[in-house]
Image (cartoon, rainbow, N blue to C red; front, side):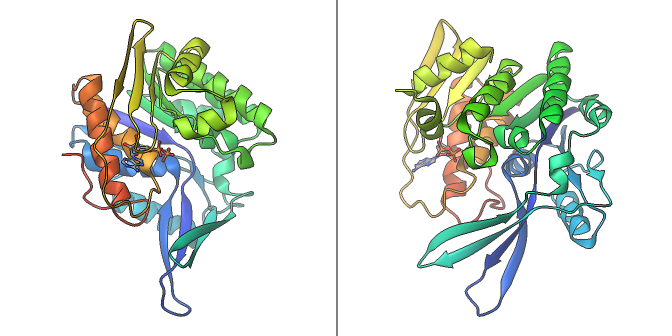
Length: 303
Ligand code: ADP
């Protein structure tokens, strides 16, 4: 039996349904989206756990019920009596979605405030997945504690997988973001950036430059996504490659494209596939997810 933990923030999602005054309620967040697709893609020989902090209120209960119903383990989710989960609201106007967030004081911002709890969550795990958003929402000392815990996990043979998911609005300034993202990449076995963000915030001129930069910072392997463009990988300094992906005719909603790609890739690698086949699996899963509305698309496996 293998175990993957995904660490980060899951939020409540309120969206307008189109009917006057009616809202629908769901749950999503980058690392949760990946956990959801990992659970869908992996067999029962893998346990997928989510690691975060929530409140003790009814809304937090609903989130845990949702995770449990999806088969995602909740044993390492801390419950904080004085906090609750973050929320976001999706407004639909002429088919375009815009997002309003209430997350500045969410329980998840304290997910690493008890480093011993993180260490316990990583015990008996094979893979830890996290992102630049996980890091962005934490106070500085908790960022350090989380990086240290994951670095020790890697030192014991655990696999650390990191998606930089650059979100400058969650950081004090872009320079601070860049510094922490590189510290996170330095302890990661696999880094999964998206070229669009990387070219904007690091000035990379092409995806191989992104891959080489993260590798130079210490990430062992790098896979650079690029929307509908080719995926670039760096396995070792001597082994790099570029794989084109099938085009998707009708893109409905690109929410969670990168998150689902990561899950499809990881699930395929963990089942023994080559890096090329695993990239193809990631792209197949992402293609299904962007062909439907919403972050979490049921029954969207890569096969
Ligand atoms: P993010 O969602 O993190 O910004 P990308 O936009 O780079 O990530 O997309 C992640 C993956 O989703 C891509 O590698 C690809 O497999 C798939 N994807 C995204 N947009 C498209 C598209 N327009 N056509 C086909 N595949 C896409």
